[in-house]
Image (cartoon, rainbow, N blue to C red):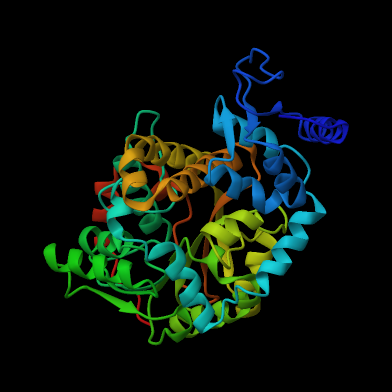
Length: 408
């Protein structure tokens, strides 16, 4: 309960700043138990929660929600959308810089950061991802597409964007649970080497390759992208760029150039920003250590020093909002299972993360870029976009088979 004039003033100041109803104490006994409209509201457990929120809102809101000290009455996603509409505060930038001191993306630091998120047992992700465990933006080619159909459409779209042909060689940096590499081998006849530093993901991918008879065409390697060697026709990175930090963009560009030279082509698929901004300190601390969604300007530091030509840029932001909506729907159906296995704090933390991701893509604070590029001596590519959006993908594949793989 509120007992002091100062408490009332502080609570009023917060309400005015974020323009969201905020109350303290249980609704049944609180003087603030005003009937709610459809708009969401926040209820704080007690005065201690209020003071903790004031001390460090960028970190403590997420932590207090996770431990149950904060409850959201109404739709959580709608509440977070309202919060994302507020201008970013200086405190977020300072907190992100402070966290960066402890979350290096060096060879050792990157392995630690990736382990934090991706080495959670695969059984957790199986509860709410599609059966292939594709943990990146799907592509909803029609309104009624299921998540499974949309993920297949995304994998196929990536292959078409890089004009993949039978027997070409591909190197993939940050391969997740292996879905793209296996799709390229199975449906396009490519030979793929896929690199990842998550042991859980690599073991899952290797097992799937064996089960599907693709182990001779796809090699999954547990190693950092900086250690990639060899020459390839195509470089693919789907969902890795936002993990490596802008300080490593130039080095990634050197890795790409030494693998595909001036004759190859590639794709960078990544969560990004309209302009350079730090990641939410809470997301960076609890969910994605070392993460930074780059702007297109920042991403160009990968390509420009190596004289790569940008062939195509597409923003799939609304596709990612829908993707995470599908994930959250499935997560909520499995919530009791998550809570039983990992505990209530973990379960609420991931609920907040998924809800926040939906809100960020809806509000436009996050984008999803697919950036296609090629070396300066790359063989001529299609003059039109028909190969990207023609629904007759089987016809496209047959056309591709008539074109020999490029020599390096």
